[in-house]
Length: 172
View 1 (spheres, rainbow, N blue to C red):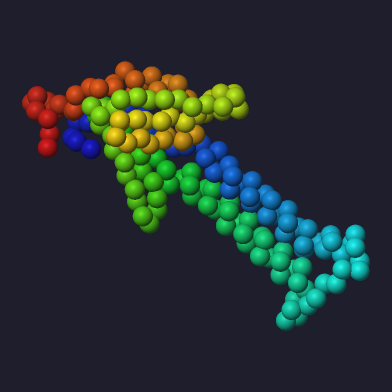
View 2 (cartoon, rainbow, N blue to C red):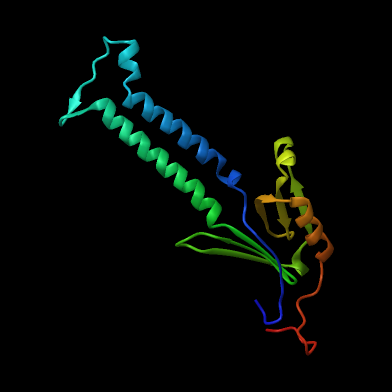
């Protein structure tokens, strides 16, 4: 950011950005419970449950599914925690990633359109996805809280000239 440039808004997506990962974690945890408590053997006692290295196969499968559920949950949390949207008086910035950082910056001069996409459930929860279009490229601000407010903020700044410092010059 340039000296004198003001940050108007910094936000992160809601946890619903990782909804599919949370659902997968819940499903995998339920499967782990089914195998750990040997539900199949209770309803069908004729189904064999072999032992592998002193461990029951259903216990091994329960541990594997529980590990996958934990991995899915952590993926959802990291997806939400490592994505950040910054709106300054000059540009829009999207930052993603932990080890491989990806930053997308769009100055207002390149901004052509800001579209809001909301399902019924998203309107009720007051979240949505803003699609920022520059004509050549576009990126999405997924699952942001109060998207109408952000869309209005961006729409009023669309097509503006770049940041001008106190001397009236555009910084390099």
